[in-house]
Amino acid sequence: MRVSLKDVAERAGVSIKTVSNVVNNYQHVTPAMRARVQEAIDALGYRPNLTARHLRKGRTGIIALAVPELGNPYFAELAGAVIDAAAEHDFTVLLDHTRGEREQEVLVSQGFRARVIDGLILSPLELEESDLRGREDDVPLVLLGEREYDLPYDHIAIDNVAASRTAVRHLLGRGRTRIAYLGARTDAANQPAHLRLAGWRAELTEAGVPAPDTLVGPTGGWDRHDGAEAMARMLDSGVRPDAVFAYNDLVAIGAMRVLHERGLRVPWDVAVVGFDDLAEGRYGAVTLTTISPDKQAIARLAVGSLLRHLEHPEPQVGRELTAEFRLVERESTLGRR
Image (cartoon, rainbow, N blue to C red; front, side):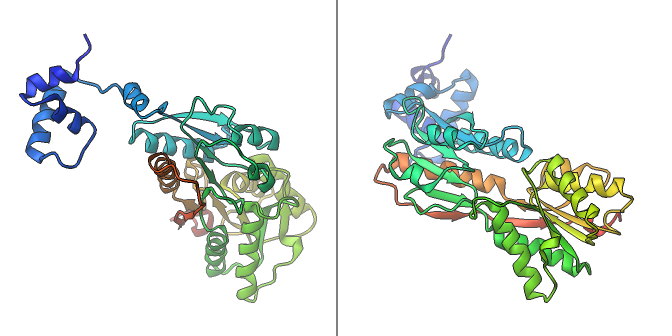
């Protein structure tokens, strides 16, 4: 039998309105009254009807998160953080997979699920500014990632240049002077690969350390095999770095596999730093030093931005919101202690 607000009110000896105020977390309820009602809720096992609550506000209670690669552990971990952040506000998250294809990103951004969702969090790879200029869908949109858009939508990212400089500075501090960058791309100059490459180059230049193109390893993608192939090509060309800064942890893990196969020891012969702080990097034979973006903060900022627009549905202006990062030092640069 479903427990109603009336049942809780009778058990607590208060009005239905008071129970509703507690359930909806209104601030003007006294601590004593809140505790009294909560005791009745716990005793009866009352669960609020979230669907009805959202419908009263003209909402579905669903927000969408569209990412390019669900198979990439970074996006899987980020999705988990978004789901947790949304649940704190009684919202359900619908996951979408764009495969990083422009056509799919356009389709998602133009509101093909507009009647299903209250808001959209989109992490684009190929979407162009022009694709969003004529967006007619009024569902609030928040953009994630490092693609830079001059658009009236909130954008959440970390400072990729600063993060990359932190990684390279750590390697320089370990006495490394031939520091390679793996993960360069030849397209879309505002993608994170180029920002991270810019940070690598800027830190080396400021330190007076050479940053030749021979130490830049391009990749077709950002998975383990891409890192392995880029590392193998660099070594086969006769270039022997004493350190590697990789676009992400997956590229770094692929590179470390090739270094092992070539008889080069990490970190004694070649130190390695990744980016993303994936769980996989914490449990390898050599644990991975990495840049750790605050995924929980990114998720909270994204969900909070959508809720802000839902509560105050004035035209979106577009804010740049930055999440923090930190360098996590492990065996791939420090050695086994």
